[in-house]
Image (tube, rainbow over the protein chains, first blue to last red):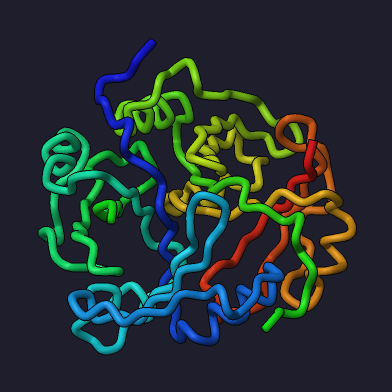
Length: 141
Length: 141
């Protein structure tokens, strides 16, 4: 049986984890995973006021996120302990998916320029059944 | 620069999400993702007293987990809201990795038979830098 939406271009991109220090966290994670430091990808994402690090895990990534100041959208989450924060999916067209997913989510961060100069958006998941409260969509490059 | 451990056989297997009702959650997730219900994999994992559903996402899975009673190790987590719970890695030899990861983790659930009759273990991550507190290891089949 097919489900409702045709989301064939939607792919799990990363799992976002909010940390106090992205350099320390990602290097410790690389040690833990036996991954070379050279393969860590660091970036400052201006629109979100965060430093991030992407670590490849198969066809997806783990993303460490450090707010640079209290104006970052993840600052409060870090203050209350940080940790597993959101799931990000890559899609061909972010605006199209905001409409497609309207039944399940509402926009909390309108499309902006995010990591790797991609168009990103953050969606709040309406359902309390799923156990996921925050979803990021990132446009394919 | 290489990091410390040779963990080349270690692979991200799934992201575990604790929910109230695994049937409802996984079907809603399938709708949200445009995935066929037929591809959902359900199982009762006796040792953990949980019903699970695995949903494939590229080279990994999302796992929905529902405790069947208060003796399940995730019962308390669900009572305090549920949601993103652990990251599971597949390894060739669970016992070998318990030793390999000793610097970073301590065993909280000793190796038992878990999902798909795999040997699994749960490790508590000692570091508060990583933003990950719970790791599952599952032996390759």
